[in-house]
Image (cartoon, rainbow, N blue to C red; front, side, top):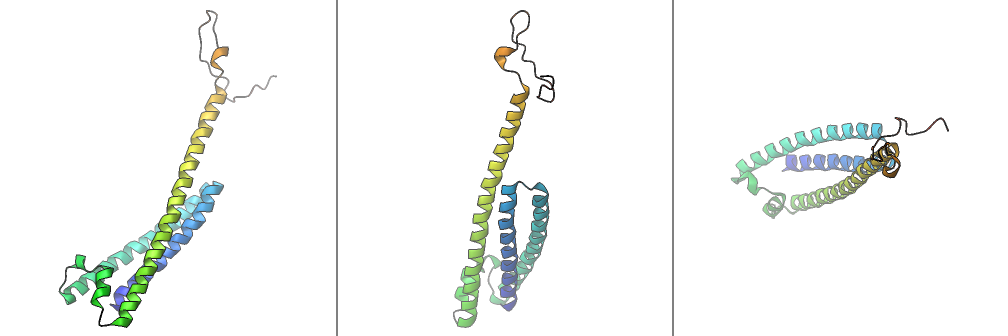
Length: 166
């Protein structure tokens, strides 16, 4: 049980680090700092790798516990383990507190990530707007582009979009 709680503590610590990076990422997205976004994404991937290893370790511990308790690994959820520890109130309380701590950390991380997702969506929309605006600046108005036979030509302005010979 100690190994299990130790792994959960480490996982919570990594999720807290990931949450902190998500907070940093929010400001980076707002600032539009692409190099910093790449760097923070790299750091997130490192933490995710550590979390993947901790998850494997936790699964191994749960499998070992399932053999000792003669239960299926799927039955050994945190809630069930807390119930199994009714004769060990100290460990039961520790596991309950750890569960609540993990739950709070993951909720916080999910909330920040949802906010970041909205910010990224807005940034994408702004980039698309800027591209559309830039393209439209290069295009002459439809009513002003006629050939000798009074047909619309649809020609584009010069490549720069500015007339330097005014």
